[in-house]
Amino acid sequence: MYTKRQMAVIYVAATLTVAFAGAATWIEMKPPEKALERYRTLPDFSLTNQDGQQVALGDYRGKVWLADFVYTTCPGPCPIISAHMARLQREIPDEARMVSFSTDPDNDTPPVLKAYAKRFGATERWTFLTGPRDAMYSLIQQGFMLPIMAPAGERIVHSTRMMLVDKTGQVRGFYDGTTADADPQIIADIRRLLEE
Image (tube, rainbow, N blue to C red):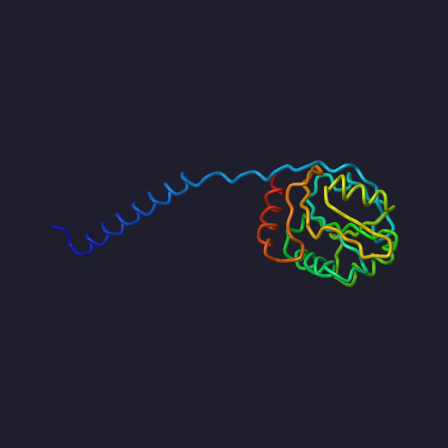
């Protein structure tokens, strides 16, 4: 005959055994996380940042970075996208970088981009790039595979997507830049790429 104390010990031991067995089964049954897609490798580029310095794709070798496409006088979604990037700047891991490509390179000179960067509180981890229109549009259209149109005298029409690029210059993810809905996924994907 067991005492009440012995019965309590047996009950606790049995409960823990069942719990551990269930946890082990759950761990074994959990499917492995699917690797992020490899959409395309970006072509090399040489552009100018907000400080007037040349920046090439090779400068991001070994880094994970999030890209967006905006212009400083945009009356539409660009301020929303840039504010979104500013929030993400505070949330993504310190090792990650952010790059904003101007879709209006004729007007977005380095001093203009520098003022725009200051407006959104950009740190040294966030770079703004401009360059010759042909080079910018070729990179956006053929490199990132995103649409952009600049009809004479009309607003520039461009994608509002953010693109995630890995340490080798491959596009690995894309997200809506106008909403924070995907932020947890963006942060998780950045962490995964940093570990690759």
